[in-house]
Structure formats: C-alpha cells, structure tokens
Image 1 (cartoon, rainbow, N blue to C red):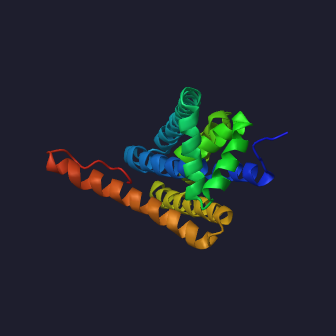
Image 2 (cartoon, one colour):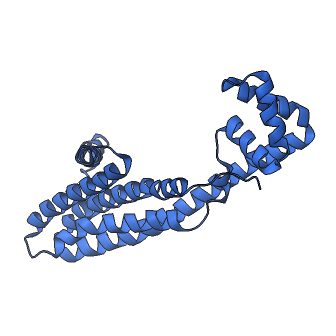
Image 3 (cartoon, helix red, strand yellow):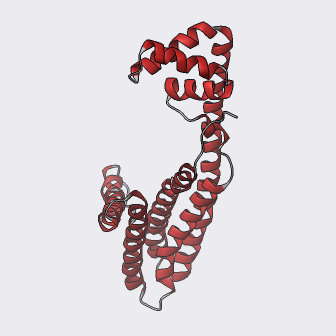
Length: 246
C-alpha cells in the first residue's frame, strides 16, 4: 500500500533538532540568572539575597520558557494545519489547475513534460501522498509538522533553563567571600555556555571546541552589553547606574 516514507534517520534528526531548545534554554537561564544574582543579589551584600533572587529567577524563567515554547509550537502547528487545509480546498475546487501546478514543479526538477504528467497522474491515485507532495513543493513544509505535538520540546526548554540557572547559583554554595563567589559564578557561567556549545557541535559535525567557544563568546558579549547599558545609560537620564552584572 502506498504511503509517505518514514525512516529512523528522520526520527533521529527530529530528536536532535531539540538542540535548539537546549541551547536557547541553557543560555537564557545562565545569562538571566547570572545578571540577577550578580546585580540585585550581590548588591544587597548577603548570600541569602543571592539564593532568593536566583531561585525566583530559576522558577519564573523555567515556567515561562516552558509555557512559551508549548504555546509557540502549538501556534506554529495551527499555522501549518491551516496551510494544509487551504491546499486541500484548492485541490478540491480546482483539481485541473492543481494538477498543472504540480506538473510544473516536477518540470522544474528536471523531468520532461511526459514524465512529470505521468508522475502526477500516479500521485492523484493516492490523495494523501499527492497532498504531501503539493504542500512540500508549494510551501516548503513537511505536513507532519502539524502533528508534531507532545511535551518534549517544552520540557527540554524548561529543563535547560533551570539547569542553566543553577550554574551561577551553585557558585555561592562554596564557602568563599561574596566577591570571590561572584567570580566563580562568572566562571561557571562561561563553562556552562562552552559545554552546551560543545554538545551542539557533536550533533552538527562541527568542531565541538570551536562551537563551544562560539556559544561562550556570544554569551559573554550579551552579558557585557547588558553591563555597559546598565552602567552608562541610566546616568544619561539622571539616575544611578543599575548594577546588572555586578
């Protein structure tokens, strides 16, 4: 029976694509929490303030990222489904026009007119595959994306944010002076950014070390810009510097 091909390789790639949520969640968790605890928490001069502000940032951020990812993916699936439904209506309302359109797509791929018409005639005998080919060629999407629900993506995003948030907080558990713990927190943050980049590099066949350095440098750049903005912009409006980043 004719069916849309599916392979273990496609399913494996689908799982690996969750690296987006892991990198996004980890980096955001590290940088957001680092900014809060080294700015607000350390400014209070008390370790308890660091833990309170840090864990509040972890909780709020993890929930927000998880729910945001769930709603974002749901909205994306709804857009894809609406596109598929539109194509179904067009195929029902103007079958000959859609037939010619699909023939034109195959001619663009290098098939002769006779070959393209033969292929499309065969496709019309299998409506699901015909729709799959039409949506893929016309809109550049895989219709299976409308079915890709579940909680794996939101949980990956939420869990990655929480794990990233923990790294700068853990530095303040070490019995060191507050200033030293702040430096250790910065070190943990850089190591965490490097680690998630290294992991992403192993999945993309890039040099893991260079990928780790890339992610760490981007993260450091974001943190540095946040610090400079907080330090220099408020005085322009008559306010004291905001101690984001210490």
